[in-house]
Length: 189
Image (cartoon, rainbow, N blue to C red):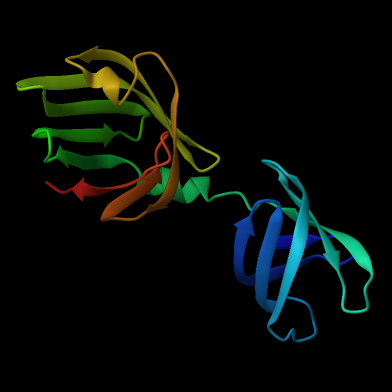
């Protein structure tokens, strides 16, 4: 978290959000003074895409507002690491359904999808092309052409935004539109 106010500083610690209350444990600070680990419960006054304002009570009982600005995700790093082919596999053993999908993101912004889907006792190939980009920590894709039922995972001509959690040379983890975390493996040729 980066706190702003009378003094700009960087705080490092852990936090837990419960309703409109934020429970935080500050472990270190970039202030000149050493900050002993401390625990504090604050009330969230404002939370949006830019940052958060919390109401805090100091040790002497003075109530103050502390503003935090959101640290933007490293889009440049994501743009460097996302290009390549990624394999997604899903199995629903209760119904015998499964999907295997290869997603290729090319450096020129072109996206290709190719896979096989087995649903309701029928198997079909799925293919699609489109575009991709990274924007504010999200992998944004638009399928512009498809065959088979690719539209289940990548709707045709509709912007899809999946929040990138981590990406490296081996795997890509993201939070999909349904709120589920997926991890896909890079395919090496």
